[in-house]
Length: 66
Image (cartoon, rainbow, N blue to C red; front, side):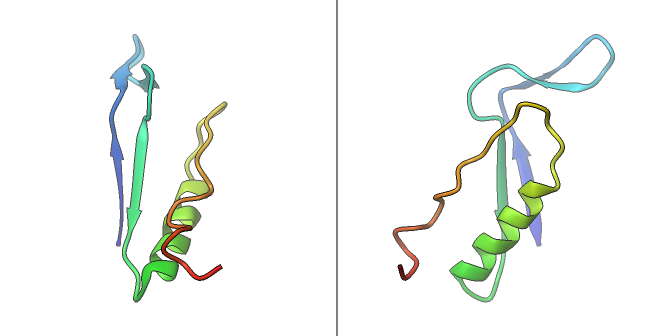
């Protein structure tokens, strides 16, 4: 399963979510191990459409074999 949490957001005058600053989304995923869960989370975030948005690409690197 994948879950997406939002914070630092509000509705604009047309009822759409907008970012108001800071970290906006937290994407979490489950897998058989950390590597699989991480891959699923990154796959999910690739499907989020947010012009000008960006995300970290180093999540979990200390815990995974180099």
